[in-house]
Image (cartoon, rainbow, N blue to C red; front, side, top):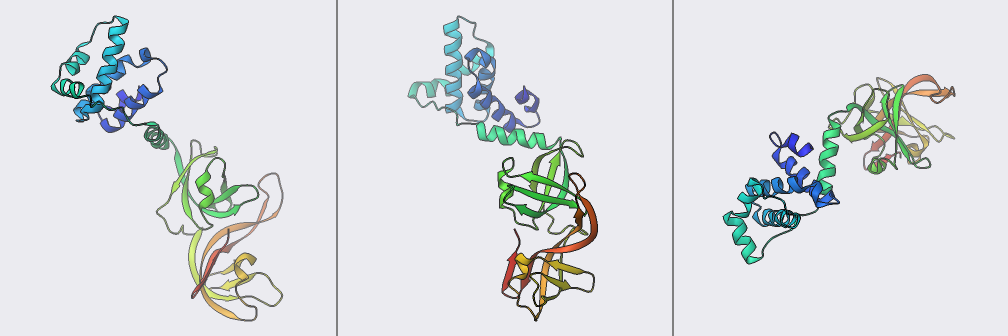
Length: 268
């Protein structure tokens, strides 16, 4: 059992496992021994009211079944704290451990995954997915049905995606402490210009030109120049379709957020 594995190195997590096991059990015989040990662990944690309840349940089951009372249970039943709490009727049931157990299992699962850094390239609301760029020619689609919270992240948000195999499906994601990913997602400053009759714009910088899509360019008037800063993602353009990935063309920067003084926009 997982609780026994964690007991020496992570006693608090082991306790969660023992509690959850007793709450999942369909029949008492499935957790008869675990409940006795749980009562002992709760007492060590000075959670006497809860320990007394578990001791009482364990005693009741063995007495009704005609089973011998093991030493660990006998010690709990003859303790000062059990006698006191049993006498004043202050026993307590354990709180639901399902959320804590789920979080624990997820954290343990994460240790077996390999995480790759990426950035939200765009959010496709029609298909209910967020596309995570992990390189100029690579990326991972995270479906909102599988990862609901990912839908709240706007383009340009850095994160890490976990997979069991390098080319396997995404199994988890987590926030990243990185603000930028050099060569993939960077903040740059330059001069934005939107030409007459064009819905898009470009930001000219000493390093590269940055494409500004219509969603962001719309707030900037044509025929004027603006000193701006932006967060841009570097990707290869798709020039055609070959299977699922499509042909890749010129590599360039595309703005996902643009700020100019008090004005700011972000693409979804």
